[in-house]
Length: 255
Image 1 (cartoon, rainbow, N blue to C red):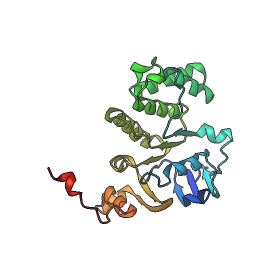
Image 2 (image 1 turned 60 degrees about the horizontal axis):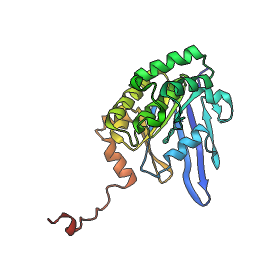
Image 3 (image 1 turned 90 degrees about the horizontal axis):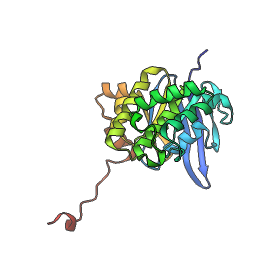
Image 4 (image 1 turned 120 degrees about the vertical axis):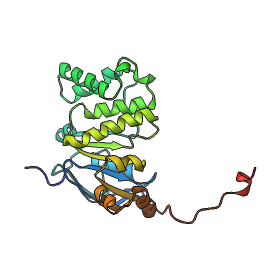
């Protein structure tokens, strides 16, 4: 029987000393949904993803993935998750093809199957021409794309992408956007964090805005569109970007 929620967080809180990074986060994401967790820098997005993927332990609260209480050390969860961190952990002395094959082998795939999937992913991610290039010589955008390949090679049920567009050139960003869009109909559940609202508006089915550690807003994109609301307008209102603006210093604009 399929779980009601692929990702479920109840009152999840993370404190670092006296600082509260995430405050009582509640999330209910059904299977097959593409969910965007949005927010300004420092809002708590990366900390939230860290707790949902098990790299950080919550101070309090509970997390269930695919209907089971999260045990980050259990192979069952590792086999069903694909994670792309904001700063991907790759082996710089491996070639792109070797990194993908190694990752596939770590997930229990055979050598032949790992190689086949690696070649297909390199083609999908427009990295085929750099398959035999050392990762040390990859650009930031190429590393992000390769990290996405590593997250996909074992065909996970849950995918977590933390700021996949951060610091990425326009061509790489478009490739990543196309790949993420293609995942929407594939049956996997995707949680994406980003501050690039135009991308979230195009590919996410539901969005949540986290501000100062709290989930301040949630809505289906279809609902916002029916109301004629743009995501930027909602985001600006929630995080307070519409407040009074300081005037430009005269010396800066007077020529």
